[in-house]
Length: 497
Ligand SMILES: Cc1cc2nc3c(=O)[nH]c(=O)nc-3n(C[C@H](O)[C@H](O)[C@H](O)COP(=O)(O)OP(=O)(O)OC[C@H]3O[C@@H](n4cnc5c(N)ncnc54)[C@H](O)[C@@H]3O)c2cc1C
Image (cartoon, rainbow, N blue to C red; front, side):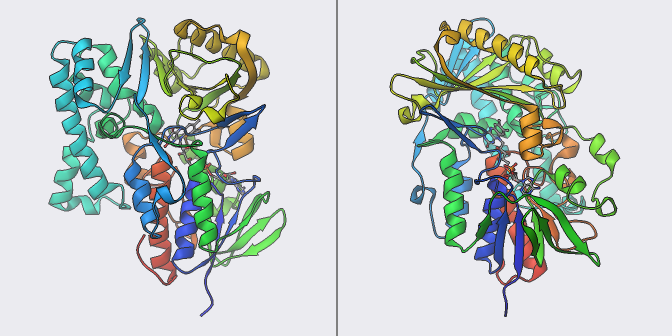
């Protein structure tokens, strides 16, 4: 029997993971990607001897990748080496104090004890709760796709769900444990990974503290792009074909079924089409209006995740005092979150992230140099002009210089800014967001956009808009869910993930 033809639009992490699985499951997969290389937002920039990952930099939840490669009888170590980071990250607080977060439980308790009375006991209790939530989420939720509330009528599932604190907000939940604003910031910052804020995201996501504090942070030697290369290699091993520099212009729908895609290089027929792109782009630009899965009003009323203002700096000198992953947390960080979600504007005292991969991978910068990646979360949809880029980046670089006591401006060999309009123009990201759809309660789990088109039954979606959501591990898990569903519904031959 001839193999079913699947066209995967987009070679981002989700597209790659889905393509590899669908090929393994017995279909003939072609990935059609507009850019000239795989990775999507997990991109790479090289200039004057500096190598930058231009998107994700935190490699968390190692078990997700172990499981994924295991589906092919492989391990991540067959493709890349992981280095465990110690400290996991360093924090510079607005009051001038600093903290190193490590995976050593005693050091963690000592750190929180230093921050507030009985802090050690409090963080122990908090992490115990996070570990429980993490386990429930992995065992019962994130590897399952929910399409209605019906399964929650099952008492066991309902009970598990209630233990996840879905209905309280993270900040008030954290307030039950900690009083010192710095302790709270340490266990709340990771809501930014979810495209949200501690004031909006459900307390369920305190489980993230288990991932970054207890499990810790790893780094693929050579950069996060090693994961992209691994998934690309895996696809090739599974016989997936790639067409790069081939933008899809239309998903061609005939008699209510996706017949294939119209591209800059001609029509590619398909039995199944998967859009691994920004969902809004697929739903507005790639189908005729009558085939939109969601209304204009739906898109207008979504809470869109932050955009990311990125400054890549190649420096001609080392920067002592910084670890591989660093944060600056402004004392009044609520004001910054408000500037993202409530009163969209450029923040005047933002919190931000500074990554220095050359601390772990010296080869990513020329000898004696250092490689900085600064990320400031900002509101999506802000005006992004050259003048704003220049003044905002100047302010941030000057702030980082003050915080670390190194005059960065004088040592810049390479500088590149990536912001809203790059995400919009290069990746077709809605409103220039970096992360898609924020994880508020009503945009989580079954409330995320549908995996399959409501009427066009052979048109599917994957990527960070769909379940389970934002982040590299979630993109991979989402494509496991995709592959299982397409395989089952389209009769591709082999069930399972
Ligand atoms: C700055 C930044 C930092 C981040 N940091 C982290 C982190 O530290 N850890 C973490 O886990 N996650 C992080 N994330 C989130 C994570 O990177 C994403 O959730 C994930 O990579 C999304 O993958 P994706 O495949 O869904 O989307 P994408 O990477 O966007 O892939 C979609 C692909 O579709 C292609 N495409 C679009 N339109 C078309 C078209 N018409 N025709 C053909 N191809 C098309 C695009 O070119 C792209 O290659 C970060 C994101 C950003 C922006």
